[in-house]
Amino acid sequence: MGDIIQKGQPFIYKEPKQAIGPLSPRARRMRALRIRVTNAEFWKSRPAVTHPTNGDEARFVNKIGSFSKALPHNRLGEVNLRAYRALIQALRTGDPALFEKLPLGGDRKLVNPQASYAFEMAGPDSHQLRIPAPPSVSSSATAAEAIELYWAALTRNIPFVDYGTDPLILEAAAELSGLSDFPAPKVNGRITPQTIFRDNLPGTLSGPFVSQFLLKPYPLISNITEQRYRVPAAAGNDFLTDYGEWLAVQNGSTSFPSTIFDPIPRYIRNGRDLAEFVHFDFSIDSGLIACRILLALGEEALDPANPYNKSNTQIGFPTFGSAHIFDFVTRAARPALEAAWYQKWLVHRRLRPENYGGLVHNVKMGNADYPINRQVLNSEALARTFDRYGSFLLPQAYPEGSPTHPSYPAGHSTFAGAMVTMLKAYFNESFVLPDPVVPSSDGLSLLPYTGRPLTVGGELNKLASNIGGARIAAGVHFRSSNLSGLKLGEAVAIGILRDYQKTYNESFNGFTLTKFDGTTITI
Image (cartoon, rainbow, N blue to C red; front, side):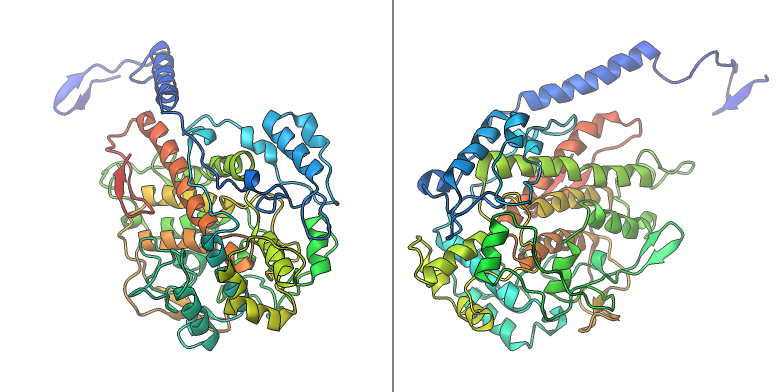
């Protein structure tokens, strides 16, 4: 072969006899070992953490503040203590054989408690991440969260675009504004139709209620997919308002009515539609959709630090390209769920909102004397619920009610928080989304949105908020479960990004992103 000229200097080309590259096979193995050992040593050196609880499990002998769905219960919905002790023993030992011997109350099974013990090979161990204790079942904070849930159930059919004028939304906002221990976003100290049922994350209070990433069409192979979904009909789809039906479901019954569906697919336009989106979704669905939309926006939407943004000769693919981004967005979801499952089963075991509604119902009916804060017992939301349904139970959007795993933190919020954090790392948060839309009142069309510009960062935060808030709309999660889940998922994703930061050959200064608390970090 002849000489090859590079930068004006000749060199002699030699045919390679084996694989080429800057490192010998042995040096490569040693570099890989150092990266892995260094990461492992970093996480090993982190201080041990304690995990605070709200004390309800020890405080209440009858376990009224603890999750027990699918175990056997008495007529008040109080768990059989022998069955509960068997669950605690299985959780304490981690013995798979003990889980197989758990006495269930019906045909419904517990959701994956043994995920609490799983290890991950990148990022923090699930047991190393700390979240605050949830409010006690007897607290004013839990009462306030429950009042929000009752109002969310009462207003499920109201289109988001009508919130500003709907009298029931205005009444809900007025009562929620007067609650103590309710850290929802406010304007001049008041909850408004623009802030109701939203989170106070950067960008989430701007624009339409639903994120653009749940509205705009997305590319799938060679097709463009419109985000119109099968949704429940407005009538006949509020469940567990009959006490016998409620008690049977607490005992694990799988005999319950079916959802009645609207024959026409619709864009997500109200709380009921939003709740159905997170009913049977896979954990990666919302992140995948957002990722597809963002990649279709082109190079300008990528994070400015992407090393291929200004390359004259290369584009990214396995690293810093679509394959890389899709992988990291979706791979964050499972370890985030493992971190949530550790907190759910081995730390908190917080009751579900439908269980709390049973406590409220039995107190109001004079069947029991539980220490429920009077804020909820005297609320307008509860009175209106009784007028509509004839009970004080919390109406559920799903026939089966909540899943059969504890409430705190919210699993959907945790994986959404992790995926959104990954997306903020790989895309330009300040990029303005073109042609924003808002769903019509009937959900049959998308209308142009003409308000303030909507950015990638703000709409990603709104996406995470929507996924968590959808579980509030369904009646299966408390607000505090969502916020803690978002931050837990964020911590998982940041840890994974950190462990991979030294694995790239490209000249790369690190991932920069805005956290849910508004602070900016570089990893």
